[in-house]
Every structure is written in structure tokens, then in C-alpha cells.
Image 1 (spheres, rainbow, N blue to C red):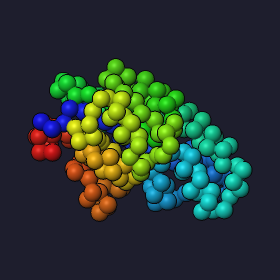
Image 2 (cartoon, helix red, strand yellow):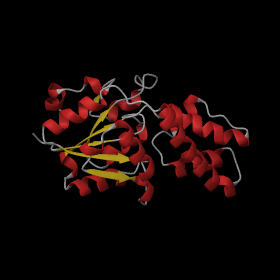
Image 3 (tube, rainbow, N blue to C red):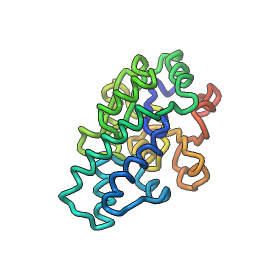
Image 4 (tube, helix red, strand yellow):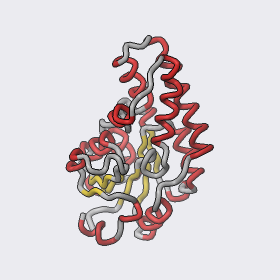
Length: 218
């Protein structure tokens, strides 16, 4: 088999946190009289908080000197919301066991901060599965740039072509494909039928649906 490594995104894929990120962002942006629509929010899903804030501050011509405070406010609030309401996506435990039983190297590559990654990993009970964690927070570039995935594969000692990656966002999918890795995309129900997912190698509606037959077909 050509794959020996699997790398997972986190937000929206392993934990149902995208609505919580949107809630946190709208609470902070509400101080500026802005409330993002679900369609607007979806365009920046997968970006680092810094780039997310920069994008919307620029678009709505908000004061640049408030960006740092907004970024910190969103991250603090989403951490609270995840602790209160964060739930695992269907199939999380099963898919980690699936790849562990096949002796895959397992990593996580996320735009979130390392602090939040550690919080979610503990909350989901997946810490023992992870052999490497890469946060785009400390890297030069975030998704859709491939750096976070390439960094994770390096930490795992794997070649990009040996890596199978799971994503839920367009920006994440582009990062995976730019890294020359294979991408399985698991979009939200509202996004599932968008034509943009044609770039992925496989599209499934839930982690629960991934199986040996699909692995072999890739």
C-alpha cells in the first residue's frame, strides 16, 4: 500500500467547533457592529485566527490597531465555548482505531493554536494516538499554504506522497493538495454539494463512512 501515514485537521473534522468559532467571532465582531453570515464565515474557514481577523477587518475597514485584541478575544472565547459545548464528530474514535490497528503514523495539522489543540485532544481523548502535532500558529504561513501539512509529515518522518489527509474546509483541502498529499474531504452538510470539492481525492459525508474498501481504492 502506498500510504503509511494519516494526518487529520481538527476544527470541524474531529470536533464540532466551527459553529463555536462563528459564535465567538460574532460576539467579538459585534462590538464593531458586524455579524458575519454563514456564507461569509465559510469563505474563511480553515484560516489562522490572525488571517481571519485581518481579512474581515480589512473588508469592513475596521481599525487596524484593534486586530490583536480581537484575535485574542476570539481565541479565548472559543476555548471557553469548546470546553462548554464542544462535541466529537461522529466516527472520531473509530477512525483513529482504524488507522492505529493498521500501524499508520498518525498526526494532526491545524490552524488553531497549540494550546487549543492540546485542549481539544484531551477533551476528545485522542492524545495517545497522536505521534506528531503541527500548529500553523508558529509557522510562517497558514492554510491554504501547505506548510502545516509538510511540517507534520516531517515530524512523522513521512514523505508527502505517503500521507493520507482528512479535511473539512476548502482552504484545508488546497493545503493538502499543494503538499502533494492525498485528500479525503468531509464537508459539513450545508457545504457537501458544492462543486469546489472536486479537487479532493475522495469526498465522504462522515468519518464513520471511511473503511478498508475506500482506503484500498485510494
